[in-house]
Image (cartoon, rainbow, N blue to C red):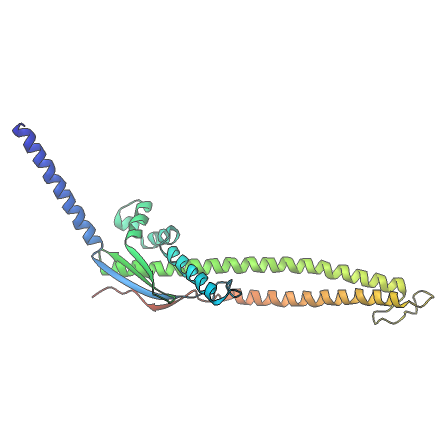
Length: 255
């Protein structure tokens, strides 16, 4: 082997070692500082879909829900918003997709055993940056939960409004049927024979038919009133959504 080749190989090995050392140094600098925020996951803003389940099943389903929230915390939907809010693509001089990948490696969300409390830790090249990232992820998760709750409440309101329209038509149909039978058999709204009715007094069967039609009408009116009251409560509740999390500890820069 010629001396030149030996020199080139030695130089390449030295360069590789130098690049590896620089990469390790940069990676170590990136994760040199950490900050942790702790908060409780609240299900008050989510519908209780587990109420009919047994205690064992309910506990397992609740556990699945909590684990799903941990996944959401580190999801691209959350992290991409954090990247944009903190301008991490500019700070780290990376493409947004690469920034999300790097950010995903620099955070960890852990659910405290047998609780609804999440410990969210972020690592970065400065104490302030680590704290900002951890708090931003928690805040973004909260925003996404509130947005989902708002969308769900709006869908429920629209469904209720559609039910109101449907029951209005039912009320009108039942009223028309009741009035038609009363006129046909010469019976007043109180059930007594009408002076302007037929010459013959209504039979028991005719009176029963009118009474049944009146009951259907009154029942549909009562149901419509109940749905309208429920719609009013929905609108009131949607104006102030319950908090999806309870902050127990802000992430603060390490001294």
